[in-house]
Image 1: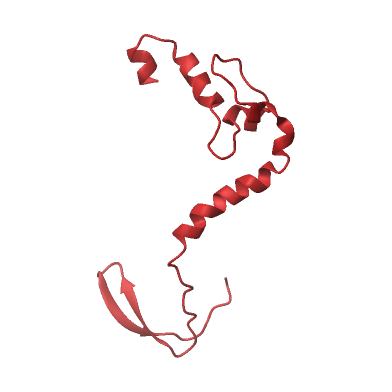
Image 2: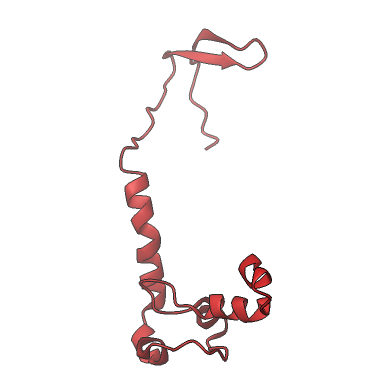
Length: 111
């Protein structure tokens, strides 16, 4: 928007170019994903974007793209230890800002 404003060009044309630009890896633009159509633009259009039959498994491709960052982000994570009655724990009191030793009485089944 600021680039179009600085060069005294119409910001709507810049916005249309942006929403018609295909997403990397999907070869589909946000306009196509929302409206299943292309807006008129002066940008050259790839043949992959024109061929609709290539994108029959679009939801699977989007889910696959969403799982990739999750795989790398959760690589070092571990499951939390389950506490049972009689376990010694340390609790943080936010009012006094101090850790106090405590004991687990019983496990709650609310979750």
